[in-house]
Amino acid sequence: MNVRVLAAVLTLAAGVSTARPVHAQRSYPVDLQVYPVTQSARRQAIAPGEDAPVSSSSTIRGIEAFLLPSGGGLGIFGRHHTSSLGDTNAPLLQEAGILIGDGGFRLEAAYSARRHLPQDSVIPFIRGGFAATSVLGTSGVALRLRAGYFVPVDRLQGDSQDTEGWEGETTLTYTWDRLPLSAQLGYRMERLRVVDFEEETSALTLGIGIWLQRRR
Image 1: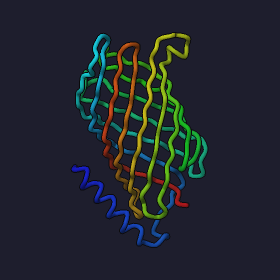
Image 2: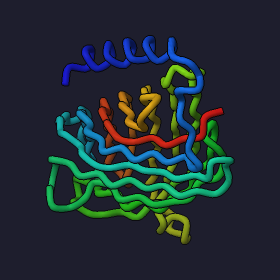
Image 3: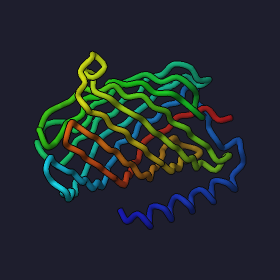
């Protein structure tokens, strides 16, 4: 789908939703998001001994979800991504973790298994981060900022290997008032360093799923 068309649809839908009365907004006893996502990704990698990065493009597909009590507290979340790069039978990312907070701000801690493409190997990481979400009144539009830093499990166990990574993401969503259907448009950037290998991935994210939330 053309990105400009999707953005226009989100803007128009937000304007229509704003004109509706507050009682049309449904409220749910949990805060649950489930999004099948498609990402148009561009990857740049620098191998040892090379000065210029090698660029490649791919499509990343997956599903992302999180669940919190309606009043906030301890919740869970997870992600599963596959990619057309490398061995297509192996997941690019598998992640599961816990979060604490509420619908507006939460802290995240997770175990991640990430595939390192140059060595075609899976590296286990521990990731910490946060997510902040701002819901724009009763319009159905929400803005989210998410960031995280991850280090390999071996490094936490005393291995001095110079491996680390970080990621950042911004997302605009629109959720219908009478049904919990939600559309998502976002941009994600990730950087991973494994000893002398460096990878940077940027991706435009599209998703349509469900978002159950408690209305304030």
